[in-house]
Length: 292
Ligand SMILES: [Zn+2]
Image 1 (cartoon, protein in one colour):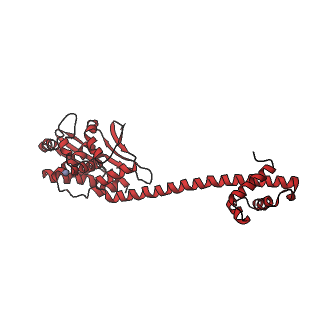
Image 2 (cartoon, helix red, strand yellow):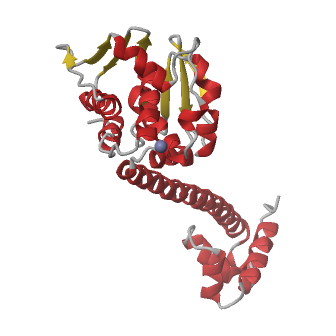
Image 3 (cartoon, protein in one colour):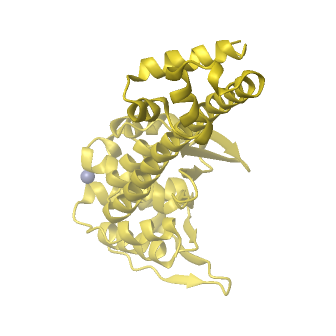
């Protein structure tokens, strides 16, 4: 099952207790996933859980029993016809043209969560966070964008929008905001899964940054060491070991045998300070005329 389907499964388990929240959730679902005309409301979904949730909400609010039908390709439909439709659309305050979400529907804090849950069930999806951070809500109703602003802002959400195939897509790529949505719609288990991914990725990124930093340092160190080895070879070839002062020869012999040892390592072996070794190495480079 996909990450998004698991979210849907989880949030569909939420109890339906309050009329205000049931209505807000239904409004979200209809605005983002159903067609609603004066004589028909129809929801079409690939998730039977979503179809069942729609029926439960309608039943809780209006005491109407709806049937789910399905196609062989795994699409589920719930259709409502007749006089009930007008009553329900009026109750959801969705009668206007173009459609708007009434302020009253989303006045309560509980209902702001509920409408977001309905929006996700109707037109939401999310990529598996292992592949990237992306959560979106899709609707063909452009007119509700302004109405939803207070809902998004309430949960510190600042989705970007893009038009795709004639629909308005609200999308979020920022991990903190995705976390906020999952918490708001009540997908607490999936939020924990998401958090685990973000934390692991964060640790990995930090480890990578550190590894890169260390690698760069190793290269820098080895370049310097190679240059020192060259200088020593040049002096020894041209003038012999005896041309070098004993204190320089001490560090030169260690360097010539070991290109990886650090200045601090040489200092320890010789029994002098690191800055002293550094000074002697500069002297060696000068002698070899390689200090430039
Ligand atoms: Zn409520």
